[in-house]
Length: 226
Image (cartoon, rainbow, N blue to C red; front, side, top):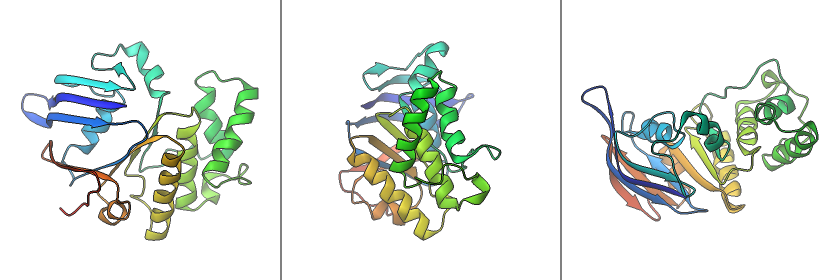
């Protein structure tokens, strides 16, 4: 599903984002990428969604070598990857339904298809019946569920959750982690990028630890102990 082969990313002349990264994430895996601020987590995400390109090495996503992806192919790539960020990036003047539908509209989905897929996505994240509410009427956990529903609208094979619990309390954090696990059980590969030690250690899944741009640990049932 995801392969990094000897990937190095250098910003400017000498700022190292990642150094000699070799990483293989198989289809349907749930992997936590952890590390302190500045460890290289954000750089890894940017490379995965082709926001940045590697200085050296190769990156393969779903069998597609995206190392030197052409700019006009990036939207095609991103339709195959669902991304959830810490800041919700919801449109305040649009309803829950409209926020999720917007992701499909910009890709040219038909109105009929949108009416079919949006309720399905909202049901998966536990927001059925709240289609007509606005973001301001939702809790932080509910707003993050809308973001996850929006990320699922294209039924991606890969979901990247980048600090999805950073703005949530412990109860909502656990609910979002449980939701990501459920999505993984449906067959979606999940990459959780976080510095939340408790959330990672509750999963008993694979943990990859980054430090100063390098992988310092990669364990099948790991713990975040740094």
